[in-house]
Length: 324
Image 1 (spheres, rainbow, N blue to C red):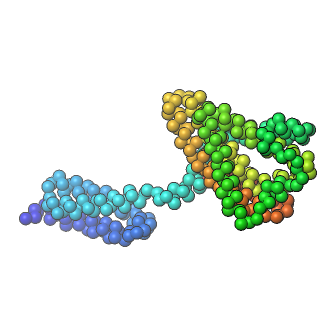
Image 2: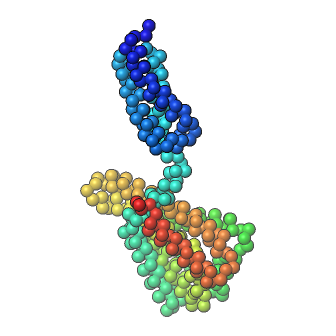
Image 3: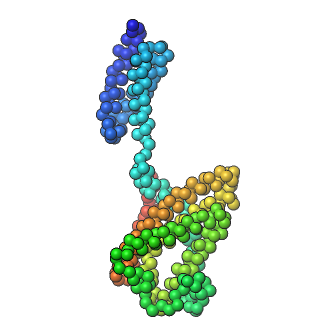
């Protein structure tokens, strides 16, 4: 037999439960996106009410069927209100590249700037030395990197393949570049940054030394125009990966007021964001190098595309993810 106080309770609260059920029924597959702003506010309020009603019903030992009904209503509401706040994989992906990665880039700029300074400095040294005496290229670079005789442009020598090989070349380039980035990144924790600095040094020597050799052979403009479309992205990605490595090394060598293990964990999370973004950047650079670079465009067009990629990167890292 239903108690009088329970009847009064159901009569007073029943409309709120029915309204909440109506809102839950409208959400369907779209979740909270099916409700407008006022209905969202109302759903949250009703969820809090029905939660209190369930506790009240249990405390007064009302009919088990009523308790079961309220319990189910609370469970459905909770799954909608809180479950709907969990980001989907696509949403996390978009937020990472729209906000998380560019913000971490700006936060880590001192490390990235230091890595870029090392690379640029060694590139300038190599260019100056090799321009004065091309034979010194063998002293600065591994023998396998130094061409015995340059008789044609970099564009004609490195990209002398037909379009049907573009996909395979792109995959090879992406894999190789990611390997270099991972080595620079891992060198931060394995060698406390020493191998990271070595990778940056080698990159700078290679870019500057090869630039000088092709300039000596009369193909200087073509060299820079050939590497520009993918090079700005690729070289920036290497600097970011190296900065992630130095972040890891910094957690070990300079934990500050944190415990060393806490500093490593904190810097490791930041470095993880950087290396994840680097992989995406190198995929883009590899596709440009595999599909665009082999095309027989003029030096001016290739240089212009390189300038556009540089401007796009500056805009992305400078403004993406900033609060309005």
